[in-house]
Image 1 (cartoon, rainbow, N blue to C red):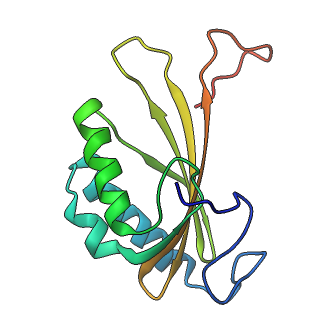
Image 2: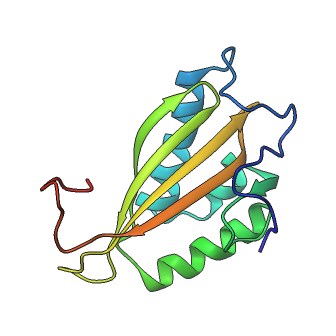
Length: 144
């Protein structure tokens, strides 16, 4: 466990908003390449290529650093061989990803939102939030 606040920014310089000078297209491309290799191909070497060794982790279930991320994904892939993610939004140095995780075919699963902060061609910070997918919706809309 990282022990970090879910709402803080630990990478430097610390910012409360997306960096308006950041390369949005480049950062989105970075996260897309990272996720394509990691979650689509289950290539754990993507962590070394795209994640800073000193990654600041805000997911309270994960430890800091790229090595902890590699270990967590290795365990995830062993448990869920069909795991995949798709990018939902990117702005400045922040890229958001929305993922549907299912343990088995027909499982309602979990909705996972992740936010990555990219700087100088590496992912330097990560936040995540999960929510169980309900069987019904008051508004009739899907979570996806």
